[in-house]
Image 1 (tube, helix red, strand yellow):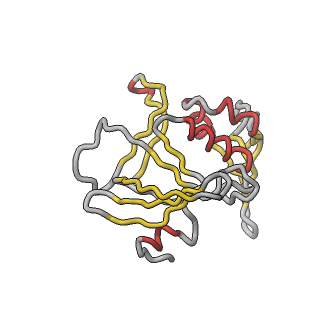
Image 2: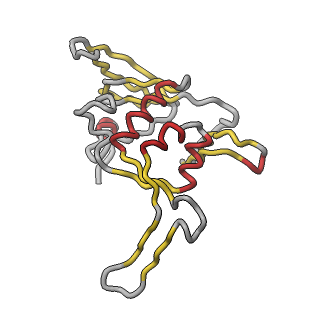
Length: 193
């Protein structure tokens, strides 16, 4: 599936809204609410967390507008560095393109933000949302596909690491962003390419 995040100014709605489009989905989901569970092995922001490293990302003006509509840009802006000019060329070929913010009469063509700084902030903001439940430190230890849902078994560690708790959650849709050596792919016997 795909998702759209942002306002709908043509409909008179400027508040940000997440609209997922699920392919091959049977039934009418229009108007239903969505709750989200985030499972992370190491809390973002800790020195040992691999989730947000020293890479940076360039945010387009559209991405910034989405963060603004969600009321998040004011919290991220202090971490951002403006993109004032862009030079695009291809080694060994003629031609290039240069873009300059001043020529286009804008303050910046976009912003660059360090994941190491922005990631933990975004994680904290996500944890504060009522429809998002964050489990960390935790990991998925089993995934069983049922007729109309998946059951995920989580191992949740205490902050000190002394105690472990098991918890099962059920989801109709599971999205895994767990990297190259995907635990979720292995648990579901999906080929890794």
